[in-house]
Image (cartoon, rainbow, N blue to C red):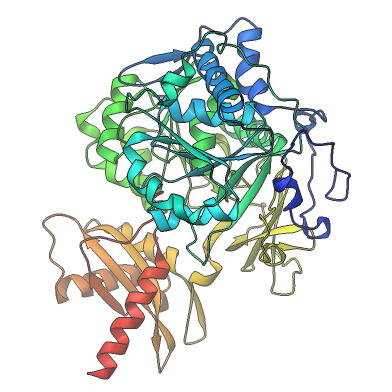
Amino acid sequence: MTASAPMTPSAHQDTFARDNLPPRDQWPEFVFSLPELQYPARLNCVTELLDNWITTGHGDRPCLITTNETLSYAQLAERVNRIANVLTRDLGMVPGHRVLLRAPNSPMMVAAYLAVIKAGGVVVATMPLLRAKEIAYPLTKAKIYLGLCDARLADEMEKARPAAPDLTKVVYWGHGAPDALEALMDKPGYESFTACDTASDDVCLIGFTSGTTGEPKGTMHFHRDIMATCDSYGRNVLRAKADDRFIGSPPLAFTFGLGGLVLFPMRAGASTILPDKTAPDDLLVAIAQHRATICFTAPTAYRAILGKIAEHDISSLRICVSAGEALPKATFDAWEAATGVKILDGIGATEMLHIFIGSPVEDIRPGATGKPVPGYQAKVIDESGHEVPPGTIGRLAVRGPTGCRYLADARQRKYVENGWNVTGDTYVMDADGCFWYQARSDDMIVSAGYNIAGPEVESALLAHPAVAECGVVGLKDEERGQIVKAYIVLQTGQTGDAAMTKALQDYVKATIAPFKYPRAIEYVTGLPRTQTGKLQRFELREIAAKNAAQKMAS
């Protein structure tokens, strides 16, 4: 099936989502090359992920585990049904309406997510720490009809409402009031709900990007996309089993978290641990307490956990997945040495929904992202869009069963070229078809004619025992065009003086090509990161440029 195939008749009464898909000639080509990726024309993904476990007699399996409660698949299904009834019978939601979700990771957040989709709605989930101005953007862009929100986040939600004329009502849970979501759910006859007869290509999710390169983009995903990421990466790389226990730090509003903590475990009939807090220390405690077997988090969290592993028994872990930013080889090596577990690196994108390059454990090559996930194809292209030979640096292009469809956004033309999704990442593919990350395309540093990938320098610096964190960017330089500048957070007890600077520069020269060493080093107490743990190099570039301008002026 390709982008030119006709769409299935929609179940949506509110046709906003389908009406605002990009023109068909701007879609990527979709490839459904595996038998498991062949989906029927009518599909509601919640039926596949949740209801089928009850139908086949497995409703008693544990699904969601927290400090306060454990929900079986049957108990979660009832909670989902009750919320779906509230949405459709009390709040007037019809298929196609967009519903905003705001909450930390919790069973209620999971249940609300699934309920909206089961009822034929379109989920728009937002990061818990967003402020009113940031919340207002998706509210207006997606013309959101309803909001379901954890009462702890009510202040910013209420501040955002005046900017959202299409938002008719926000219902909160967790505050105990008579109009709370829990009270509305607790009605006789609400325990069952028939899933909306959605098309497999009905939109069920609009995921907004973090906006690190400009205004956030709404990425539109179908019911079949939800299943495709489970049946490509989940089935062929992760290979989870029903007795696995998933855990992780990414928010469910981040598609990395949605896949790793909801979709993949539920597709396998496994369970998910949802700790109240997911900072590295908290995650470490929860892994040991609940005997987690599969962990999803960012490279910085794995690195932060390393120093305290000896204090906790995390021997239950058998699979660790990293995404969100490049995994430094130093972190991979240190984690394997400490735990015996190899981290599964991977690259995904909100536009693609989840990971599309990443190898199973037996095919891992330390330092490499891996090979395309079964069902996906990838290549490296030049600026003209032509494929380059192995060993040549270029832009990453990918296609498969998922792909970019922006919500009414002219940037669709930039992301999709000749039927391929061009992710904005710079890669090298070796002769074996393995992909090696270089940098985001805008993170390449050109110094005296040399192309230098900031993440490669970061990886070299992170291998030094004095370095806790670092970020590397290009700094404008009259002689060389740019020089490499490193912002470094030192380990406790280390001093950022001239001797340390020389030691780190010499270390990098001895580790990678000498021309790549950081000619400027600044010691800082912390680095700017997104809520999902991604290093915000654009902020470092802005800081570097501002400091350089001030120095010139003085």
